[in-house]
Length: 214
Image (cartoon, rainbow, N blue to C red; front, side):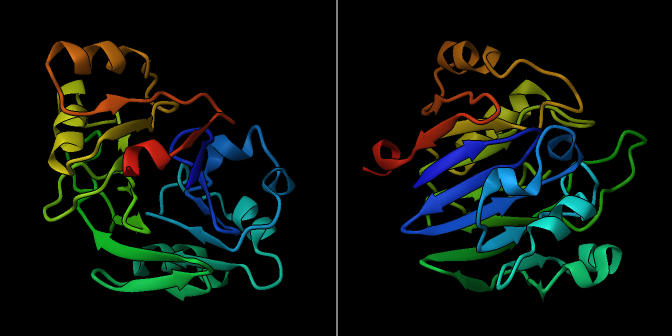
């Protein structure tokens, strides 16, 4: 599986001819057009915030048979752009890939109030993208996309979350809106003896999961 990082929490997943984009939000729309991604089989949206779901960009990606998956809260906001509503605990087939749907709490907002409905996606039992969530039970994956900063996410929170999902590789996400240096986490994880490797990706840079899965 090939994972390519784009701004904020956006990832392009490619495996066995299937191509999925997760969370193409406003930071992506500032730098990229829909055709920058080529053909997309599905767009997965974790929650309704604009840095994860840019309506115009998603609509432009929705070409032909391309599906757009989101939870009920996000569908209410985006309307007909969403083709399929997902539910916690279900599995969807996207081309050659199986996607397990797991709801988890969005971190608290800057004023301390709860966030919106937040849905994470486990791609082919290899990669977990949690949206803006950092607390979940029963997830065990080789690769975790981990939000490293936000209104209620500390460096320790990020590392503890990666450890809790038993990943071998942590890919930092969500550091454009609340600026943070993902390279910092490489040394930090080593310093506190975390059982995983941190792989910071620049925008447009890719990681092949073969080593993590082996």
